[in-house]
Image 1: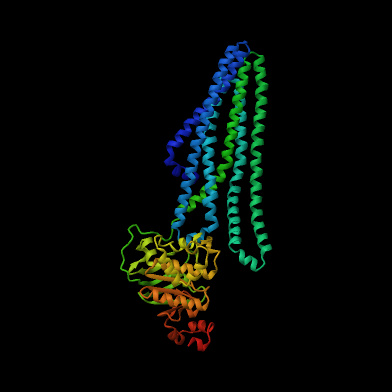
Image 2: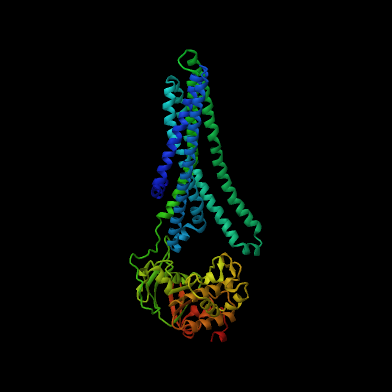
Length: 577
């Protein structure tokens, strides 16, 4: 997967990669040329006492060094640009893919894992690309060139390389093989830490309310400890890398000096050649040591690439049509035809054979016990899921044939748990209609019974809203979410238990204002409180994923035991009548 990702996302940057290769080649050639010049200074200058030769050759060495530094700087510059571009493109690709996911795929991966894959995992692949550009490309050139030049200096002494190089590669290979599983475990532990931390930050009020601080502290400590244990195990293996390399380097250097001294004593080798050979040996082994950086990072980057590719290869179960319908008759009609839905692997379907029609100007109420499938009906209308069987139609068109923007302008959804984005009141209200005027925003706020508290906020429409709307109350969040849907003025309004945090007086005033505003629209309300839907034109009772009864409040009180039981659990006989 790592090779696949690099091949795919580095293809547009071929010119930058070519520049890195050329500069690394020139830098390495310059680096390899320096020991030869140094050997010439010793043999031709120092031994013969030729000061002029020493000065001339020293000047050449200085020039080669400056050239080598310039090439190294250029290689790092172009390599960094390539790596950063890769990271940018990968993050954009993951983000685009996640946006296309249905609620099913998001629930499968989980928000903490998606965040880790978009940030930490991409960073590991990006860092590997940078290391390849700055270290790994020069390593094989240095090894091959160093071996050739070392053999040219003295063939018999090159036998040391036949022992030291394979020994170093074998020892590093043993360490790297053991690191792969640890890196995969480390990424999973990072996911777990992110999950626990996210839950604790989001649920801080619940934690404080139930005085569970110590429990949550221990829970985080356990997740943190498991990550630490895996990190320590990985760190111990990484710590073996450099001592292993240095051990081989030092033993090889001793061997070269030992055998080289005998070669010099017998007249088969000059002192300068021994110095150059030793320099090439160290360059070869240092190149292998630089490659160990890659061997350390490749297993972790491979794990991260697998996780990234898993996201990129996952197709959404809600697919957009190739030729979407964008022009539909504005009737605001919703129809379910024998619709069933079940989650993958579930033994029982959530919905079974749902058939209903909601027409323009009609208010439909949905009520039922917890788990009866009310929210799933709403999710199917908003196309957060697609029906397993049957068809959902909007204005006579299969919802799967509608374009995403068309559906968003026809259906305005206020979810069960309203979410506000960081910004201002105005930016949240304009989320579905960016060009809405201030007059439209205030009108929507008036209908949603939110204008009074917004005026009291410092700045009014410009008042800041924290991420998730945590700086306003639950009831205020619900009213702002309702106002956001009203600004869009869709043909179909869907309220998923969107009045649960409101007091009865505000609930009644809001429903009265909504009735006047949405007289020509279709309204579907999911509610737990009977008072919210008792005035609806039709009330549908869901039980076990089926519509078991339908009618007005008065009719259902006579015909449906389930509905009557729900009503009497909230109201007295007199209030229900």
